[in-house]
Length: 432
Image (tube, rainbow, N blue to C red):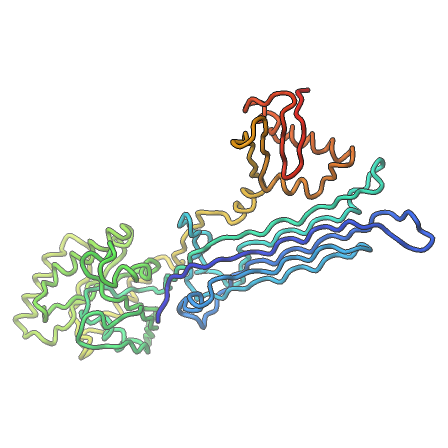
């Protein structure tokens, strides 16, 4: 089954904690601290695999976790770094934050692997906290926490030209006679259930990549039919070729068909409807000379106010197909060659920053005269602070003041003698 969207969970590695230990050797009864640093956590890495063209693998495996860094060890031994987790994705994959839908990374132009989320840094061992007045620190720094996120992977094919039109207009047939692609073709709606890519090679003009998008129907931009599922695949195309059944084999009006297609494109993405367009009037072999003349006059009159090239073709007999391909190649020459890239809307580093800075100060709703101070920032501070040591306790008091926690307690109305509870530690509060 073709898959062009997937929801996955990723987690970078947690940094290993710094170690607390002291030298214990013969003839060295009071050795100094020798706690080693923790290892860095593994990264979450994305890399393009040109051999992939769907996101099917991510439907089967949805959780990806990098290794945590090892804790530091005694004798100044550094903990091992955690291994990265590497996710291989097809070209054109866009990575979004699942909660907000914002773009974190577009892999369309990435030749090298990209570290999306860095693992947490390893914590420092107690050897780093020796001072002139603290010769035997009994605390070490904890490793940075992991980053955990749900992501949406979205495949937007990379093609120069997108074939759009109603079902059975002849898009798949056109792709099959102009490229080496072999799409399934039959006389019923939605024969094309997946987008197909093909390379057009011209002997004396630049070639291009062309995508056949499953038939768009009225209401596709609201999710009707299959068209909505695949409209994303024409967002990178530089030229649109509207393939229309000019013979009206199913009683359709070709002018109305093009109008409806443009309307759906406008609703989905207004910029798409303004892309350079060529109108390929297909199935002209089914009309006699008089009918051809009338049909072409009718279409040219309808689009005389727009800079739209209208070409009669027959994908089945290849009539006019060569002229169409050269017209597309000429149009592409005059357009910027840069790939259409979706700009980053969310910096992945912001997830770690937000987590590091968060804490809460609340008045307990269950116990009178008790105030609760919690959050990741508080946990990390307690991890490398020895509250039983005078120097450590002074550091704790200064931390509470500098970070505005004492002020928040006062704003909540704390009184002398009331209790401040910090993750199992309790303190009586007194104003300075």
